[in-house]
Image (cartoon, rainbow, N blue to C red; front, side, top):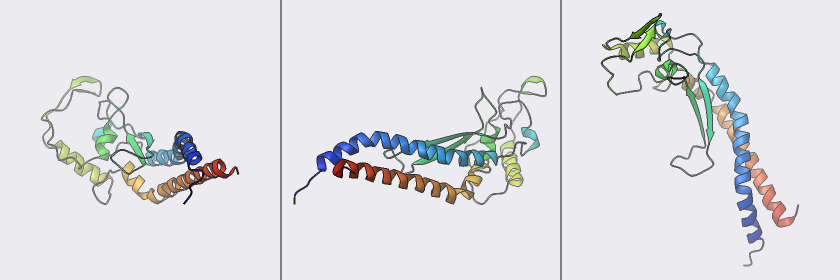
Length: 191
């Protein structure tokens, strides 16, 4: 058996690897980001529980921040797409969305006292925590019903949009494969 064009094909793949991966990430981001933003927009602007309407760290901020990340191989997971929805951080926004999204998913025992927060113009407020976590989780479950134990707002919406997200991802990857095949054909045969 005589192998011809192998050296050219390997050289093309090495050159193409970084360029096509960057293009694949760009295509996936531009395709998936609007869907991720639509999922974030499904999160209600108003707090699901009346106690979340305050100016403290755990306040409800409405629509979360969206992050979309892609991997093209390697690592511990086979997933190439991850979406991240966060309410904020202590410096830039409330984390009430993060708490509400994961209500009931933690088995870790709660703290005895809340962190110090400002409420209704009174600075330095702190309260004892006597089972409020369980009551909070029950309240979120009553405010937004979902099946299973996943997230209540963004995750629930993402699961409902999964077929569309998967279809868009498959289409971008198919285009990536076609571009790679065309580059190899051009390197080997000149057309």
